[in-house]
Image (cartoon, rainbow, N blue to C red):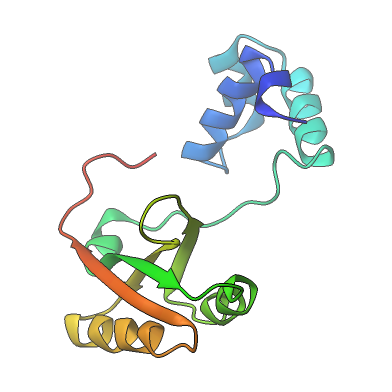
Length: 146
């Protein structure tokens, strides 16, 4: 199922669950103007169809503000993408990894408990065989989070 095949109520349901995956079905139903059983059936269908792949923890702003985050732009050697992706996946501080167009091949969003730890992490990424160049930007603040 793709986003183009989802109805407006399905997208609204996903937005509510994205904000609070533990929201009670009855509360969601009131927000959407649907019955509780209809909402539960929609959730079950979205899970069965793989639209909802799982549920996670949303960390508090207080905890998040203590972490140092950065975007690490990465240029890699040809034919090394699969191996480098596997190596970066093994580093838990790499929170997301994106393939991008332009002068860099990948953008990793990383987080660390301190600047020193971030520095070590960036060095570790740069030392991966096939990584030709990195460019890092520390995230100073998050203005919008959804």
